[in-house]
Image (cartoon, rainbow, N blue to C red):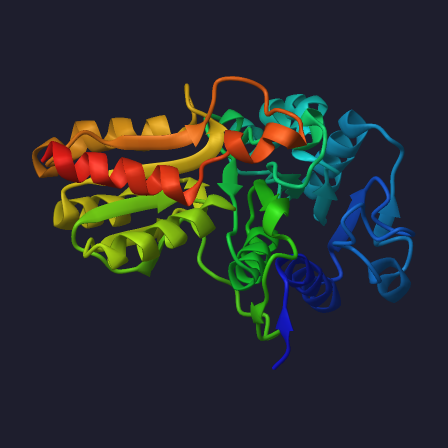
Length: 326
């Protein structure tokens, strides 16, 4: 079995689902002839034709609106926003129509659509191409927010997102698009949505993360292990609906939690997890919840970019503070 990158896993999942479901179509800027700015859709137009892999005008509002219309009429569109920072014009259609359609029509019409977006920093791009704003979508009822952290989870979660009867935001951490490879069988097996994945068992502290920062959380767990500290690592994967039970069970065991995310700290999704822990797990906590995040500013240009994003060292320091506090 060949090893593939995360971006190749995305392509593989799209190709599998298009081959097995004629209602699946892909649309977006440059997704056809060029295969997407990151080549996530490379070769799909040649294989499935121009009617199923559609190059659109440079108009995110129209892309989102057409996606809602296609989904409401029985298709399963997968739309691409070239960068997460370009998704703001799409939000009106996503929030006001896609996410509300099931409720608005009392289940008569659903919107089985997926919006894919390369997400986050770390590729030496300008700030509008490097944003991490997943938290803007986690407060929209009726909308799933999914973010894989590995090739295997990208493949399985994208299949599940396309098959879901309701709209899904699928954010792809572009910093790890080609960072490493792993074996991913092209067997059409979806992974469950709405489930956190426990990547590493531990007893002293729980590290909770998603997307590209899962890599830093795992590196921090390795560093802590060298000092005799046992860290459990949880990949949230589906931010909403949140599988809080898995996080709570881990914190009941470890008594400490460090939440790691790239988005700005204030009102980031880590704040929601911390609030739930305070409400529901206060008596299990041996120390205050720590958050390691981006800063409350725009991501800087590439000279300072990596200093903005959470590092394994910052996660280790936060874990040690939590241990010292108890």
